[in-house]
Length: 535
Image 1 (cartoon, helix red, strand yellow):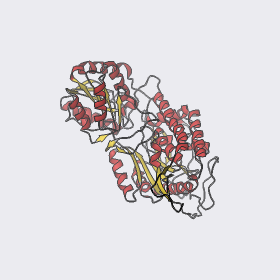
Image 2: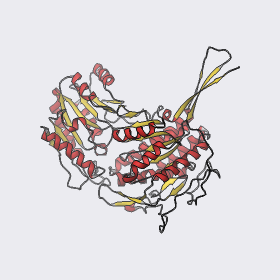
Image 3: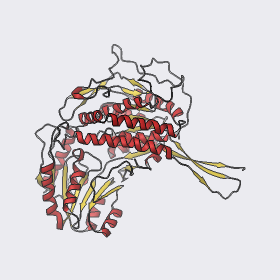
Image 4: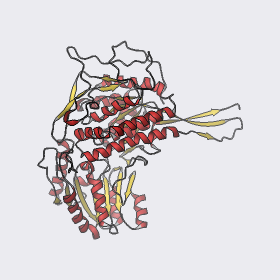
């Protein structure tokens, strides 16, 4: 758990402060140094200018450190994955900016931890209210930088805002304990206290919700944060910074350091190894999570990891086929298959297999429409970049070369280099790449099985275990399979399982800890035992 030291100032010139919010004021001896522009360069503009109907008031391009918009000496472009258009040039923060952000967060923590739970709750609630007020503009930013259909983006903003609402309420429910001990002259107390500065590293597929799910809990607990958003989607994190500032979140409590892919490794390492950081929370690939865990281990930091998944979707003979198809559509094709909990393998029992595949193909052809996310009819936007398309292409090609059959789709879409047709494969076997690698795209491979034991064994063969789904109308089977699946979350006769009230997280190599729910705030709290003697 972090303790606070008095840090000297560096005497560096300061950037103009963002519009002042209510709450705590920075101390005279806790100022955060601003980076100077390189010789011959002017300060970068803080606004991207609102291209394509996006809100100029929310489309910020600088980092946000200590309540100030912080330019960097370099910038990097952010592109619309649907059209390839340049949405704006964003400050390319490096190690020095990351360390300045950590220092600002640490200095703010010395004061934020002492703010009453009621006041923290009130500020989070104001931030939530501003998100709801600006929900349409925030959704457009997501669609522009991520590509997902606007309706899905609107859903994400509501989901994102609900985490702030939820944790604004949980802030006032952080309870300790009184423990009965044998000695009559002693009393034992357990306190819950914030861990300190949290480094928050988030992915591109849910560029708003993955931030608020972590930050809401951290701020409610009394922690401060430094957010490093994905290089593909920094605008959502910066828009949240603008609204946090408007809500009166004190300077240094919420900081954002965007950076390019070229600098991501060094910035991530700086955040995970900085001695002023007490907690690291990451959502992303298992491979990257292992690297960050290694960095965090050197100073034994608290970590939360929400890593890769390889969800099995099992359909037993007793299932209602129509309901199973509807669940498969919802689970597989949200965000064009680019979610960590989306179904990656469809295991269908022999007696119901042909009917399921036929109806699944019909539903895909009828209800899935590929297009630009801003077009009303679109249900499937682009993948995030061409590398993602190449992986889907590789999985399809490998499966077909080993005997799989393309039922529908199977190739790049004519709309552009980042689009791929929603694809259904049958006759899939376990030796194919799509059976043991997470595709992260609109590919649905179907594997036929005979017995319940076989299905559970196939599902549990993965070294990850985030989510799993199955459809059955046999009550005994439902209990057996739900208990046997080696995952952190199970959907029974349901394809959409995420909600702010329930714990999100996995087992095995899918991560550590839980987010959301009443358990999520515990990731940012330390237990302290206090023994009172001589009574």
